[in-house]
Image 1 (cartoon, rainbow, N blue to C red):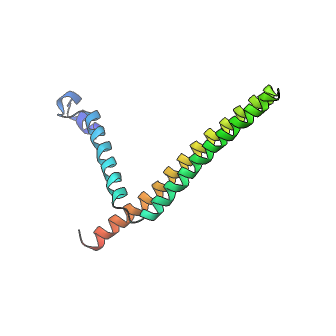
Image 2 (spheres, rainbow, N blue to C red):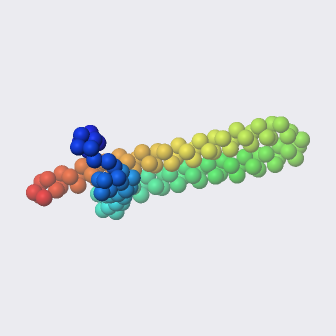
Image 3 (cartoon, rainbow, N blue to C red):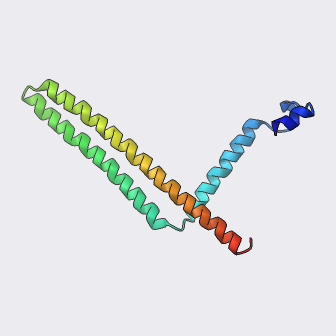
Length: 130
């Protein structure tokens, strides 16, 4: 599209819109569509299940950190500072990875559900003649 404007010598400031506002409007429209298909989903149980699995991942990471802190306190109380600190750092890193993977898998699963809802939406409009 840019080449058409350039061919006729029209500058960006003369076009009546800015590229940034057009992109921002497109992002708003996409987000509104995603919100709409998530609200009117054909798979509410699947979305709920994905949310519960993600929460379980978050709880697992929290329990790991809590148990690690208790083990660290126990290790320090018997004088094993180095081992306790190493265990603490390693477990916190694993907990962060668990949080990251839980969030990533939740988003991936919801994307699949969004795709299925979009296809269902398009097919239902096509078959009903809209």
